[in-house]
Length: 356
Image (cartoon, rainbow, N blue to C red; front, side, top):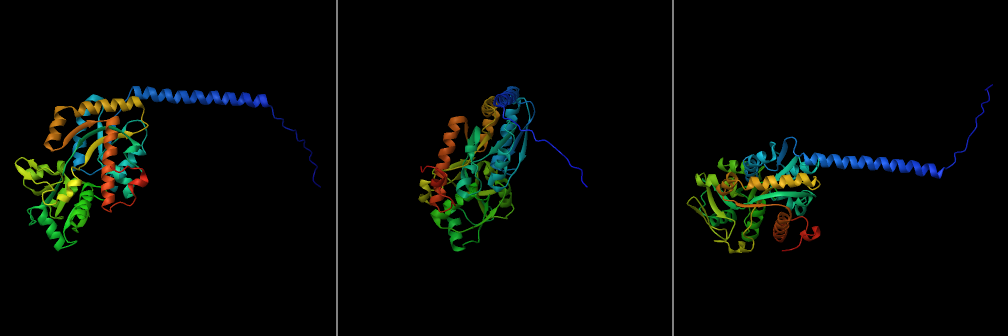
């Protein structure tokens, strides 16, 4: 037989005053922890930067973005008192680097060194991110675009290239950097205005694209002038046109405007890329201000100004609200330009981007 077990259930009574007291203690404890966290962030920001920073370059080595990024860093490091370790992280038309920085800690130690591409991600469905998700530390410069060809190609002008492409649709190889890159945008414009059909060959940036052009792996490429100017001066490539309404003179080499043979480009130019530095939006304000001040002074240095001039780029050196206004205007013009050319997957209007 089993032994009988007896137990007693005691009722638990709700003590309202005791519960209120417990909640009060918990609220005080939470408030103390919260204040402590905020105080710690403020103290850390006040001492910022206490270690080296990481600069994530969204394009590969040797291109326009890489060149500008590596030129500005040495001028900023002495002001910050810390090294900026530069890392190329190409891929996805810059989307991989953009996502990497956006996923990093909001402490100001990971910076995005980029170009214009994130402003096109939405309409091309490459990413949900744009520069709206970052703080513009400094838009350093804006560049011009040239259409350059391999020296072995028979063309002496852009018109000869287009005429050849129309006779041999899909046979001429154009260097590209993927959807949203400079060659992609200019290629779509050329297709809209001239109706030419070429075969795009993608690379991880201007640098690899130029290298491929020099090696004869592609026939031509629309590219940042900053990445091509030295090759034009040295006669290693042929400059067929500049994407502008005014001619360009590079050390005696006169490059005709794209509107010379095709006036239809007039409504799209001047158009070009830009280069800058961004951090996450929620980095402590004290750290953001130190970054803004440091990059402004660095961009004002004679060494950096000479570099920008040597690349035939136009210095901007703007940040904050002024930079944001520039970014929104560029996005409005370019996304609608692509949309009118039938090159977008999403209408700019659906993303709240106003038509210029």
